[in-house]
Image (cartoon, rainbow, N blue to C red; front, top):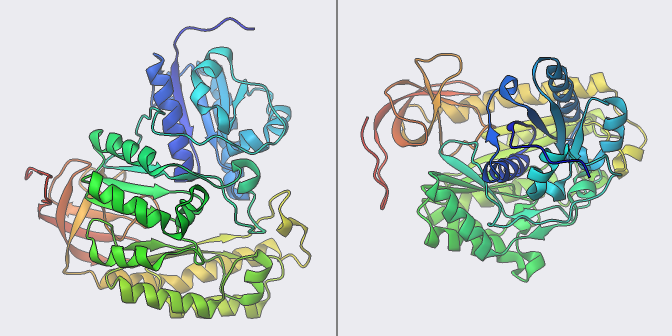
Length: 457
């Protein structure tokens, strides 16, 4: 066995989804607990951990480019580079062969052992394997967000989507207990989080595997509302066939359970959905969206779609454009399909040419722009409670924040051009301008909720 090294200066680059961010925070918390110094600048680090994402081709390429950038820093002070995350579980052998400057790997099941792996230079590359661990509230986390925190309610996924390789490296769906989640939520609140975002690969299926039935997420949210004082609790993401109407009824009457539903539908045409092994149809989805709006009148809706899936013909794509016109989502994201190794879709014939898929991607986002703009313009003149996230990167004279209908990192920005407040505080903002992606407003007062005191700035 190699001799252990002393405590080090460690930097972390976290890529991909919020679930990956939680994994990064677990590693950082363990490192801090073991005496390592966490640094923000790569140039100050002796060890750099790149927590990779492998969801789609663009994400994999970003991960590889980041690894190459970091290993280049070995010439100016960085002593070792470790690779964690989904690509460490799935592509470690290939990465070790193609980028020999990588010193070691941290598997998805080894996050709590990150101290030992940093000391020993990581583990060697292992063959692809799914994760089996479920991290509980005992995992110490170092929050990397201001004002909000993610709470991972489950690991893995059981859905048979033909385009997705996540079950191959994240493993089967595994829920945590309500008691464990409530305790971690209370810990995060004590650290200053005002908003709690519940996340999993299929959050609306939470609890089915631990005998909570179809109302597991409802029971969890009810317990969190009664056991914590978060200003906002939201969940990401909803699956159309497992969305609990009783959960929506709770959302409609409980202010702290914010009126926001992110439901990635992936497509609208029956034939493409069948090829994706996704339940439902475009018409069924429209009926569900109407039901959501009836139960939660002030709801903000988001969805994500894949264009260029194998076999998608022009008629299928036109069906999707028409669906988006009728659905009137407040926020919309999209991907151009990329084949993932070992997934059923990768074996399908009649692939859509990459340039055509990119063209459809651009057309879909362009079709959504006036819909998003109209949604935002309806807010002009309204006063909304806003979570301040800090100064704007482009200008020190602007603050950035979000209202309840905007989830972190994905739904644009609310730029505050009049008024001051510290990051992490709730303030009342009057909306003065609207654009397809962003809003502009001015602070008109502090936020005040029972049990929460906010000083005026």
